Image (cartoon, rainbow, N blue to C red; front, side, top):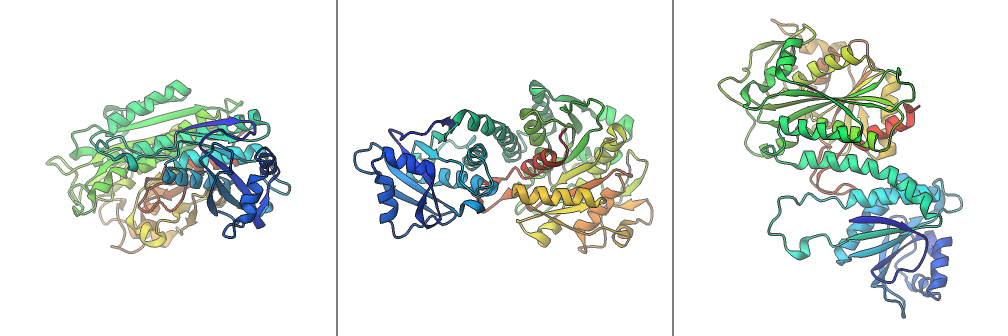
Length: 500
């Protein structure tokens, strides 16, 4: 779907989408459009007893007589003073969904600044256009027998507003965030025979074209560094493991310490020798969604030229059962020198992150680190698919993440840490074990292990196991499948608090 921008006019074909305020009031631009339609829009709205402009409501009407339009789609804006960023994104996603159901190919969306609205004209257009892009996402790469009526039809959406040049400029910045979300969704959607560690390394190397510096640690280098925990996870796979480092130097102050994001990239997780049940195992292709989010975030930040120095680090491995695979009871030595007794080979993500986190904080000395991982099923039991779990050793960082989550609709819920949970991972023969006491506090003890590898660096761990893959598609900006969770959240964190 192509998104364009223009000044206000009545389109000659397709669907005209018009925002209507509460109580059926026309916005200033809607009145301007109405004048060009000889009052047809106002008559249509006043004649509709089922549409009052209530927030998030939609109603399709026949186009007024004398126009070549297919229809007019009314979109309820609610009260002007209550319109916000997330509402406009949802509006964009919702109208794309409706237009595809109609079988429409071309549409024009009319928006303008409203008295009392917290958003400018440019912001309204930018957020609606981003929502439309996100809502239009589909992963149809491998479909070969899809029926025509099952395919999306919308080819063009034009956002019309006064001062379209400024609106287009603002929208294009937001579209770079959409690029990052699309990349994450694509990576997470791909099957593991296509996106294995070396293949994702190539995707990361392609980011050099937009100014990201890339460094790849091969297994020989990781062995030299002593990354026994990460390398142990990949012993059962015929595919090599990697750490990939992405660096965006966007701050005017080149000496400014970077912020860092670390992602778990288990491209397929069988559970290893502690093998998972076969039912649902195909979903474990998205056990690299944490790494996918970091990669997409780096693309978004570089694309919009974020004024910040940012490091992205991803540990890329495949967890397979094999004669050479890691066994329950094995002890591995991490890059930090600390040892871990592997009680369960299916608790592998924390092993990957232990070395990745230690390497990141020692090598780059960041202001803070945030890691993202589809780490535990326990967090899904706790929070479902509405919020990710947040664990942190720093209150300021945690509060900023919580605020960014609300502002981006990628919400978080802070979970506890502490000495009582930490002692649950003490091992009888090593410094720690990779699981706690059975099923108790599984997501918390996993985070407690990670905390042992961050030193004094402010750190947050986001357990996104319930958020990486949506089975329902209830959010108009997040279709079923890979959500791209984390990109908008962390982009908002950087934009709000860490850009020069």
